[in-house]
Length: 291
Image 1 (cartoon, rainbow, N blue to C red):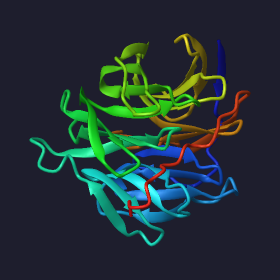
Image 2 (cartoon, rainbow, N blue to C red; image 1 turned 45 degrees about the vertical axis):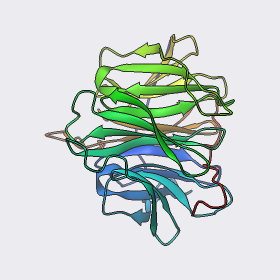
Image 3 (tube, one colour; image 1 turned 180 degrees about the horizontal axis):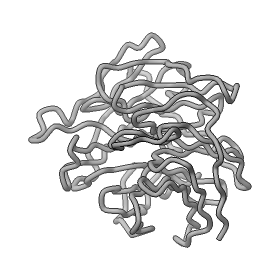
C-alpha cells in the first residue's frame, strides 16, 4: 500500500465546509456548504477562489446542466433548484420543507445517464433522518432511499451501472446496481467500512477504483473495486471532505467547521498528482420543458 503526503495548500482560501468539488471538463467548481457559496478554482494554482453564486441557504453540491452554459442544478436548502448565470433560482422541489426536525440538502452528483442524485440530512445529524433523491430528465424529484443519517456521494462508475453512497455518520459506503434506463436501484451491498473516521466525498477513477475523503483522519483513501485499500494520501488538515480528479491531479477540499482550534491549513484546498486519472463530472440532462 502506497502512502502519499500533501505538503502545502497553494490557495489562500480557508473554507468552513468545503465540499462538492467537481471537474466539469472546463474547470473546477466546489461549494462552501454552510455559507451557500458556489466557487470556481482559477487555473493559476495560487489564485484565490472565485465566487460564482451566493445563496441565502446552504448549498450542498451542483452539477452542470447540459447544453446550458453557466446553468447548474443544485442541492440547496431543503430541495433541488436550477441556478442560472445571474444567480436566479428555479425550484424543482423542496421535499424537506416541513420536516419534523430541520433538514438540509448535502452532497449530490449527476450520473452518466444525466440524472441528478442528492442526499439530505438533519442539521444536527439525527439518526436516520436523511434521504436520497433522484431528479429525472423531466425534473421530477423522487425519494429513492430513506433512513440515512449523513449521505455523501453518490459516485458512479463510468458506465453508470454502479452507484457508491456513503452514510458518513455510520462509517459505511454501500454499493448499488443502477438500471441506466430507469434509474431504479438494486439492493445495497456493503463496499467499505471505515472504523477510524467518516467516509465523506468520493470519486471513481478510470480503473473503477473509488477515492474517498475520510473526515477526521486527515486522509484520502483509494479503494479497488473489490473493496481492498490500495493507497492512503495524508493531508495536514484533519477534515478532508470532498475529492475530484482533473485528469491525473487529485483535488481535495477540507473543512474548519466544528474544530475548536483550527490549524493553519484546515479548510484549505489541496492538490496532488496521482498515477490514475479521472473523467469529468457528468452533467444533468433535462427535457426542454424544464427551466
